[in-house]
Length: 99
Image 1: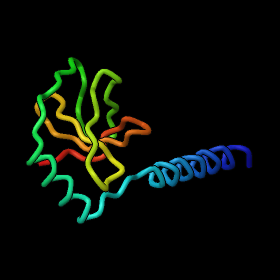
Image 2: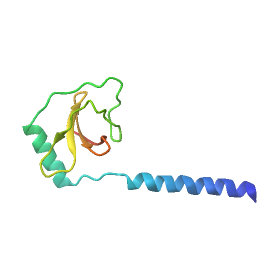
Image 3: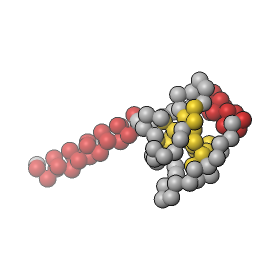
């Protein structure tokens, strides 16, 4: 009985962790995407090079990267390692790489 219970508890813990991770997912609406892309295109900024940063959704940018405000959008943007990224200012995590 004990050998069956341990894998079951581990499986439940894993499923709970997946549920928590999904709750942290940030959704950017199509309207917000349009506003951000247009604003970024009209207000270009210089790229900041951050050595050793693997840039992608979920990565955290350091405090040395200045975040730029987009009117009417709660997220900020920056150009890091020649990639324009949308960032959650509270966590400094990349929520979208803008093409």
